[in-house]
Length: 417
Image (cartoon, rainbow, N blue to C red; front, side, top):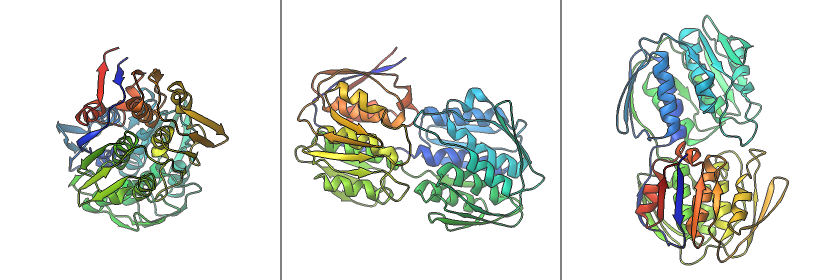
């Protein structure tokens, strides 16, 4: 397996281009199943999860043409409505083919998903919503088997806020007979991006980005062209890394409005931020100040930025509490950060981080996608050499992260395993 070798102690400075958002691209790729006409996408990031999704769609019969960050998909000859375990186990987002397949073809068989081991993320919300829309669902040999002659509109109340649940049911509802109302819907910008392309395809959607989304079903959808939104988590990761090293950088092809809660916390830590239409400049003079963070559904502080802020707090001035309310097993990076000398105490879902002037390089093991990013950040700040193993996690969600950090002056290289 590949590893990262990092020589720490370098202040990050320069310019970095932010890629398209993985969490927007994945449902939008699956939305191609809703129409036999071509879907043309730009700003699609080159990530392991994207490659897995394209492989899954191609296996189903979707014709795919790819040229760099441009992808064209045509689902006019779908012959297989199965998402097998060998693909789904590596990426939970594979569940997003369920709604489009049932809506357009009346049947889908999707293996129960796997993915990051950061906590329980049940698919019950997806299944309950589809059942309310008239789907017949059985769990057979570890697979979800869903059937429906045609889905019908329904009022669906989400017991828990679920991004993929909202996306799956939105896509399913576009071709349902009648009106579907999703209450307690997720409000993330990725939901809005999905709604944009669905609307461009002919769907009738109101309220995306609020907690009540209304979808008036139509008989068919058509082709469309769309550019994937910027990755707000990659944006936040690089901003936080620059702050942790006391550096300065210009981030391009991104928008600050996608992550207000993160920017507020960075300013609280002492960072000076300047935003323009598609750029964010950050200047951090000296060590950041430790800041308390508490994760919660959007628009609050994102769980996907918790590990990065813990890494920043580990080298900040003072002490701060980091509270995780979304996933019950998302402090796995703490033990690895301690190997660098970070002083972190955990009690329940709260970590108390006591900032240190320096960390020391060590051999670390990545445990999940965002934890991997926090370990890279901490290794960049630490003195001496660090080795980060099992970096396939980071390849799932960050496009060429070592090249982007190197462009900011980091001494980081990928070593073949």
